[in-house]
Amino acid sequence: MKKFLVFILVTLLISCNKVSLVTEETFHGTIDGKMVELFTLKNSNGVIAQFTNYGGRWISMWVPDKNGKMGDVILGFDNPISFQKAHEPYHGAITGRVCGRINKGVFSLNGDSIRLANNDLFGKPVKNHLHGGINGFHKQIWSGKTGRDKDENEYVEFFYTSKNREEGYPGNLKVTVRYTLKNNNTLRIDYSAQTDAPTIVNLTNHAFFNMSGNPAESVSGQLLQINADNYLECDKELIPTGNIKSVKGTPIDFTSPIEIGKNIGVDFPEINKNKGYAIAYVLNKGKDELNFAARLTDKNSGRSVAVYTNQPSFQMYNAWLMDGTDVGKQGIKYNSGCSVVLESQGFPDAPNHSNFPTIKLNPSELYHHIVEYRFSN
Image 1 (cartoon, rainbow, N blue to C red):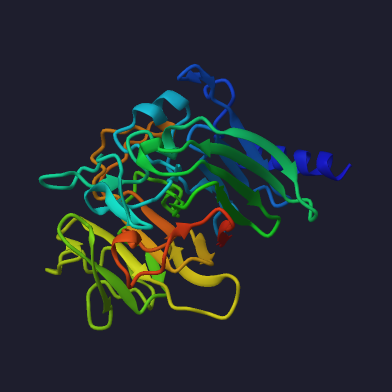
Image 2: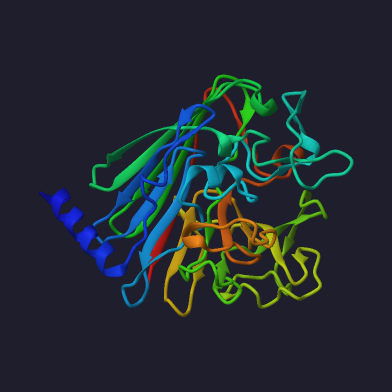
């Protein structure tokens, strides 16, 4: 009975608010001979989240503004082929085995030199390794199933086994990612992984957010707060130097909420002048299992998302490489600065810096990364 009432409520909300969900009619087909599926989660407040097993992607998130009007705050496409062919290949995807960059695609593990795929845009004379490689997790067809937890929250769970030496990584790695849409308007992601040989793991979700619900608008005026007193210094190829530096007195200090675009024209090594940021922050430690990482707010709509995680680092990138080539849901072109990623993760290039927290995983261990996106208005 409860499920039926929730269905009726969501149907009415969709009708009243003109919610344009991705549908089975447009979102079907095969990639590499495997079926691509669409999964839709709803909660008791009418909030809706959608996902696909292609790359384990988060493809839409419908949340209300201060007047109750629903808006989709996640960029993406309404069909799988557009995801596959997109100029920006990581829309909403699980990136791994290791997100971010590994310098020249090489690291040492238990005394052995491991060589990974060299697929990054940056890197001279050898390209760096980026987001798991050429055919990383973002290009894989995961298996998926839906369910309800003990609190009657709907979830979708994705499974993928990364084989030994896939993209160069050692060990067979079994990965599970569960997205849970809670009835308090929280989207929780649980990443779990186990290996049969020593390897490295650092997973994240590469969703692009625009809290206005309209990615035709820039996020430069949206307020961002990041709970980090320090950041990882990087070179021109966005590879960490190993130095951890204070944000105090710099134009990349987001410890208090400021507009994303406020300092975008400032000369500073971590800013691509008049374009934006791609910065790994060192999150301030807390005593709770999940610590506050960041908050993004659109002043006009009142929509806000607060990020909580058990990870030590937070990546902020304001999509300055987008150039309008990709045309997303509702025919909107994705231009430079139309969105921002809010990624919890381990330190990038961690295996090559002894002073960084390790991302090594042994056979006796369980990798468990938790992040919650808590939406409000």
